[in-house]
Image 1 (cartoon, helix red, strand yellow):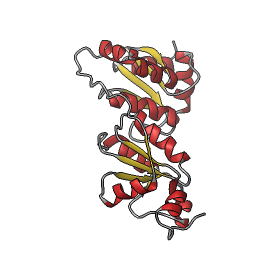
Image 2 (image 1 turned 30 degrees about the vertical axis):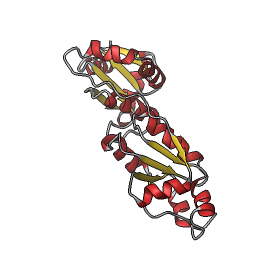
Image 3 (image 1 turned 90 degrees about the horizontal axis):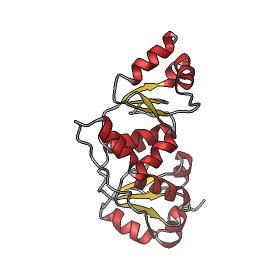
Length: 221
């Protein structure tokens, strides 16, 4: 075994859980890495990690070490468990919980709540919620679109905001998502529901329908 593989071996054996990923748990640099991080965080378990984008030799070496071509890669008790798809499927089936309990017998593992179900609401209902400040209101459109038309009270859901909500948001507080016609916001709402947020709403028809049925002063584009 060469020096690089010895280094990788020492890494994966240094912690019961070790994740090779793109970026780091605070700022993942790909969606697949972020999914695995959020799953592990939902169980409140500690894990070691390494940013494979920071070292090209390590990136290639890890691929060879586990005979696995893509990232992220999760190791449990020194053995390769799998990538994003395997971790996600194991999370959904309950198999991941069993693996974590075996790997961390003395660590209390929090069992995440099942995913919430996205509720699709009309602009009128969303307007009432906004006026009564009942939720966190997030606009998934681009800054350029918001320059064309926006609704006061809806915040831009950029990467920084998304990570902040995922890391620190109250998963029992309602979140309302908005986009142009309702499609992108529905996808965002579903993603946050899958991350354990329990009260997730999507504005059907988006800001376009809001302009048509609630407030005609909002420009259509």
